[in-house]
Length: 309
Image (tube, rainbow, N blue to C red; front, side, top):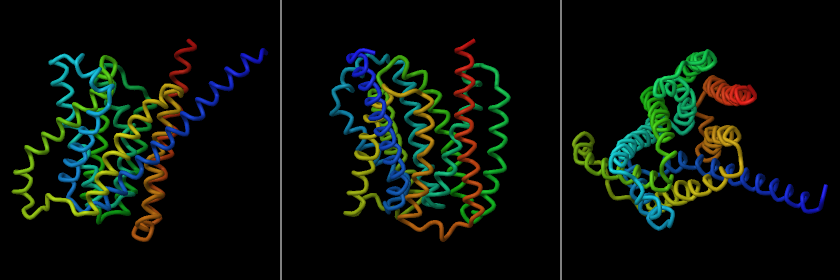
């Protein structure tokens, strides 16, 4: 093998390693979003309103946004906007799950996104359900019941968490079609900006339901919101796009599935949530996470087999 070939191979391997490190960094940072959501004293709707506003504003400073925004057709812009409303409700229910339960419960519920996706995607694309998808979907139910059984006092938070996961699955499927035609930066900006406007219009009604809700963040909340919006949203979004150029979709999905693991470990470190949750909860959460990774591996094997055939 020539020296030139060796150096090229080494460069490729290095770029893959760097991409993997970048993606793990992104997932670790995403794990912090739940921690910050718990630290911020604002209610979930106000919190998400600020997060969407700050993040969408930061995307305006990216050159890629201005290149892509001009290409979006009006008809598709309305579709993207509707997905943005869904994203806003997803975030509100996710942070609601944290406020009404805790970080560990919210992240365990969020781990079911891949199963909702596997069950809903064939309906959107008019394809047949695979037996393995149904089997894994059914396997999650007793694990969720186990989590619910040992977190009965957090029932409201758990329901919000599962609904948040369902919404995440729906908008992930819808975004899959949109990202084929348009730049991810532009789509993300339109979705976040629409969500910001939607929650702003909804705010007077929300304040009627929850009178006395503070709208202005404290000094500490301002710092946490900036970290949440810029460091934990805009930055990992850019880094993840860079890393995805060098690694496979399977590796990416498997790595992203680590977010609940990182988040739950961070919740133990910051909030000592293991003291308020019984071992049965962690058993149920562990079963869900094992099913998630096993499901991702089997899907990868099935796709690989199809390519060989």
